Image (cartoon, rainbow, N blue to C red; front, side, top):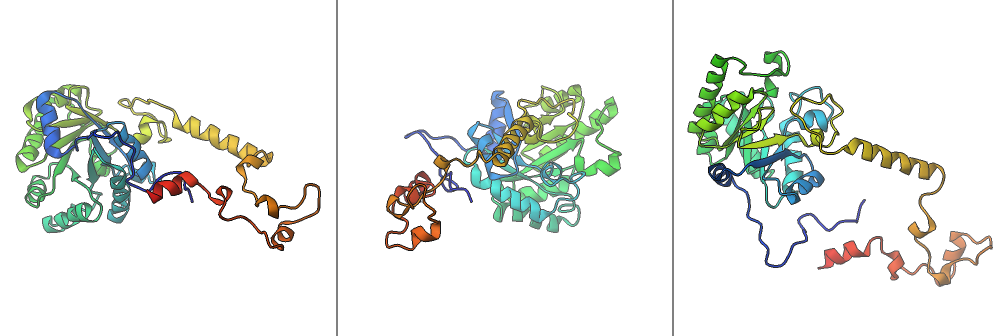
Length: 326
C-alpha cells in the first residue's frame, strides 16, 4: 500500500486559475482556429494524470491496452469489462482532457440497439465522454449521436480488422481507395461523428480528407496535415517491447530508466543496503533495549512503556494523512 499521494481527485492548483474543459465541440473550434489537437492513449490513473497535467487535449483509453498492458497478440481479445475497468481509472485522473473510450471488438458488431447499450455503459459506468468505433459504420454513428453519445470515428488501418486486412498494412494507397476513404469520412461526419482518427494512410489522402471535413481529423501514421495527432503512450516512451513503427517518435526511454532502477533496488536488497536505519521505524526511546544488550523486541514490549504510537515516528506518511484531513 502506498501512502505517498493524496486521494484521487486532489490536485494542486493556483488560486483563481481555471482550466477550461475540453469537449467535443471544443475540438471542432480548435479545427476552425487552426490550433493543432494533441491526443495520447492512457490506460491507468498515473499515466492519464500525467497526460492531463501536460495539457494533452484528448485522452483515448485505447483497445491497444490488450497488447501493451495485457500482453495479448492483438486488440481482438480485450473485453468490454476490461475496457470499462481501465476507463474508470483514467476518468478519475482527468480534469481537462476529453476522455474517449474505445469500444472493443464485438461490442458494436451486432444489432444497433445492443451496440448503443454497450456504449451507454461506457458513459454511465466508466465516465467516458465519447466512444470510438472503427470502420464506416454510418448507421451506428447516427444512432449513438441520437442517444446523446459523442462519437469519434476511425478509418484507414483499423486494427480490429487485422484478420481481414491480413496484417497491419497501409490503406488507401491508390487514388480510387483514397476517394472511397474520403467518402466514408464525409458520411461519418454527416451521421454525427465529432472527430475521425485516420490511421496508416498516405499523407496526401489524409490531407485531402482533412480539408474536406468540417470536423477534426486525428492522425496516426497519416502525416502532419491532420488537425491533430495521437500516439500510444507506451510507444512514446519505449514501453511497448515491439518494433518501432515508421510513424512513432520516441520521446523518452522509460524501459531503460525502469530497468536500471529495478536492478539497483535488487542489488541494494541483496547487499542489505536497503532499507537503511534512517528508512526504518523505531520504538520510543523509553522502550528500546540498551545498545549492546541482548534485548529483543519482545523484551522491549514487556515493560510499561511500549512503543509510542502517538509520536511522529509512528505515522507512515504524515504528509499524506494531513492531506486527507484537509
